[in-house]
Length: 229
Image (cartoon, rainbow, N blue to C red; front, top):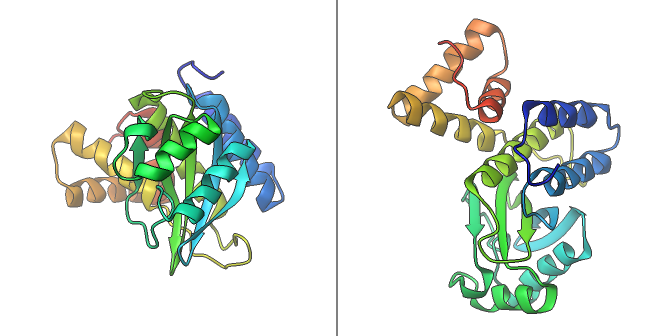
């Protein structure tokens, strides 16, 4: 399925699988495996947690991703290393030449054969956050559609892990701000409104349809079609 346009059916299948999984670890693996399957050019994917400035891998499709996280800790640089990361999305199309991580990027390429990456925030809390990260083997691997797919997957994962569930016994309050923020961006672009007006639009849809705000946002991110407001 990788390399094809990701369809609503793909996400619907994933949503059903996430709901059916009884263990948190199974949900995490379903999400990272879906990233490899659905994102064109993705060679490995994983969920990384940063707690007090240290990266740890919660789920990964390949040892290379775990090794990339280990290098972040050893070298003190990388997309998931900064404590209290605020960027929703971090993208590097050429790790070798990325000035943000001059040592880590080269090591990831030389040691692990990875040349590009995308990382999307899934949840955050006090002194802790989690990201869904995907890697490609060459530079310039990922497209805008691929990024949109990762963002939608992160939204699905955030929703799946919500409702009082815990990750790693931390009792985190999971955030849905990633998927809501993406939906706001689509509304702003399509309707020519500001962020406050976009959020008000989404809340109006939520109220009129008796649907949770995050679910309205997730459907919009997936379909790229504005509901009637």
